[in-house]
Length: 150
Image 1 (spheres, rainbow, N blue to C red):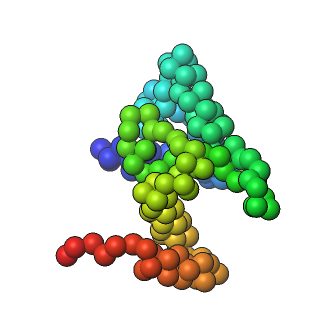
Image 2: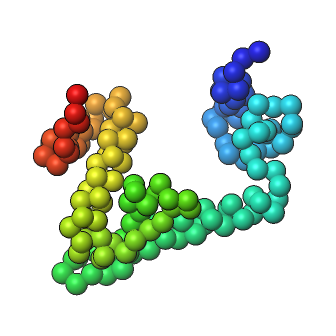
């Protein structure tokens, strides 16, 4: 018997072939069958699933909120989630204004941004067209990231 991840990958590949690409709705329909490897990935209790979805909606709402700021030509994000906040049960968000005003929180925001930028670089490293972007990320990392002890 193959590992669960391998079985899930096989099922996703079969669905991709069947539907000319992966479609979320087709995956959910397929996963309703308890005999599939994908089934256990999903929450099938409708009450719990509804609550979980509302949590996702709330996080999305927080992430998309923008507001005008004096002296800035475009609206800016109102809230930010720092890596340290994400380690707390349920996560958390802070006012971007508070974060920018506090040197320690601002440093945490920079650290969070660089971690996310590094993840972006790893995810898209095959796109050589982004080489200049990756170089810029690396330059900022060199300037602001403390070397890790050996």
